[in-house]
Image: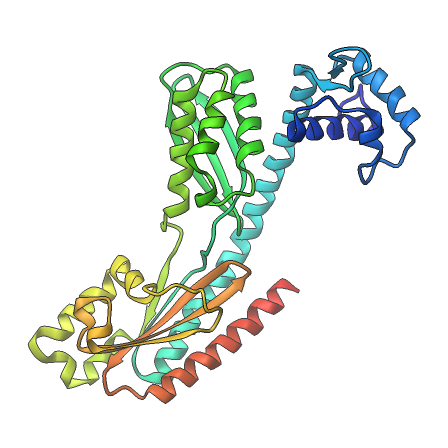
Amino acid sequence: MNEELDGRKQSILLAIIKNYLESGEPVGSRTISKIEGIEVSSATIRNEMSDLEELGYIIQPHTSAGRIPTDKGYRFYVDLMMSEKEAEIANMKVMLDKKEHKLDTVLKEAAKLIAENTNYASMITTPMIQEKKLKFIQLSAIDKTTLLVVVVLEGNLVKNKMVSLKEELSSETVLKLNLMLNTFLQGLNQTQINIGLIKKMKEESLGYTSVLSDIIDAIAETFTEYDDVDLYTSGTTNILKYPELSEAGGVSNLLSVIENKDQLRELICAENVENGNGKIQVYIGDESPIEATKNCSVVTATYQLEEGVYGKIGIVGPRRMNYEKVVDSLKNLMNELDDIFNKERE
């Protein structure tokens, strides 16, 4: 806690900074008095603003105007924000590590259970983000030529990217870029980060347009990466029980697909999830998106961990598979997973 500022002064200073970042206009005491959580009179706010001005956190650009933050005020805001976000990321990683182990166990058991129930090959992905939104961006200088970009996406997905610097950045510049990136990009998804927004950011980038472009490119990469999505399989040898799949080397091609996680992910994630949690999709023969499974039937379903966070389940078998049993097994698994995830959230 800043020893110069008590709780009320901090609240008023933060309110001034946030309001100024949003409006670009000097902020008056009347505006601050209307903000929820500031439970003091306009007169008291004016006195506190005078103290903050004397301490160098805000200035009055001209007579009768409101106040705007100084560099010292911005420094306080950025340091506080970074401290809070670093603590949030640390807590998030601890929480995710605990949940990840439990979730992996649940998903592995689910794949095994459905393979045993259907007598076909099964597969299940770890959760993915349906529409990734930026929660927070943190820049840290690793050395004179390298910048670490930590990107936190909705669903508490943390991505780290390295950006090479063509010129050394001062700590003050890194802090201001941090502030600008979070002000412009926080809460946006990939489609909302458009050319117009990037142009506006470059105009306010303190002349560092090249490094800003590299940072935005690094952020854009995090939206399309699948390296955090794992996939579990079970019952692969079940497909050996069906002689029609062994014709013309069909089994070896199919086993090759099941061993290739990229192809397998493409197979069971082929359709979108716009129709919601639990949607079941059936591909028969030539309808399959993967050549090696054209002699099979593939049934997929979507499970939802939380809003916007989903995973996929797939079953591969012969065209003569017991579709009714497969669909019933998937529906039962959806219900079981929903019960487990609901208990986890309680």
